[in-house]
Length: 390
Image (cartoon, rainbow, N blue to C red):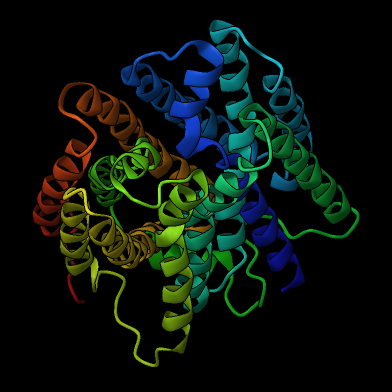
């Protein structure tokens, strides 16, 4: 349990600090690099997703030979060094090169997700996934609130120094963990179920089902996150409370709702299947995204709250479906497959948001996102079918 806590806490630190500047990249590019067009910012955010997508399968393959915690020691040292360097770069081409190499090393922390899952028994998967979903998927949103606060007192480029310090802290945590005996991936922490028993239970599931789930992930991440890149700018344009601090707070609302949803899920006595609630969550997310496009700050706040609840329900259940279809010793490799499609979706969301904002204004990503979530809701039951009962 102590190991699990350290790994989740380290992942939380990574996700939150790495995303301090994400919602403020339009302002950062404008201040430091001469105000390039919105499509350029969207292209850069898409490139981040592309780098993570291509680098993570390498980390996953390496983790089959080298313990994930050992990998993180070297990777986070490189990430921290490059992050600090970004704070002193004023050339746009050089920033692209250094920052994207930095992202490749930072992406190694995603190994913690499948590693933690491989240490859990099947009956603990949903609860663990709920915790990790808050950390991985909503830590980015929570980091925006802290980013907005930091920007009230620091220059926008100095945020990279904070991010670099967090990388070195993660490296130190990993070094301290290596002093003890760490279980290998696939070893259940409670010893009640062996990896062989788990893999025998899931071996009959088709690899085709995993790739169908990947298609759903692609659609969901593309349309679910298309409002993120320019949300802070949108809020500051339409809201009365338009400070950077308030923009970061409203941006982070779905993350706060996700924490509440995790607490609620732990209290619930009735546990449904992992497929339960996905369709309803997608439709609720569509409605929540739609009302945020009406350029009213109260509707935006309401939409952020509803969106956070819907996003949590969908992400937890989609991730749980992956681990149902995989086996513990293959979690990292199968997670890398899903991660590729998630990154493709995020990449499409980032670049698509830049194009939509450039041609149709700040509200258009909300309309596109709402329509896209409805399409995803229609496609989900066709692609991901319930398994036949024996």
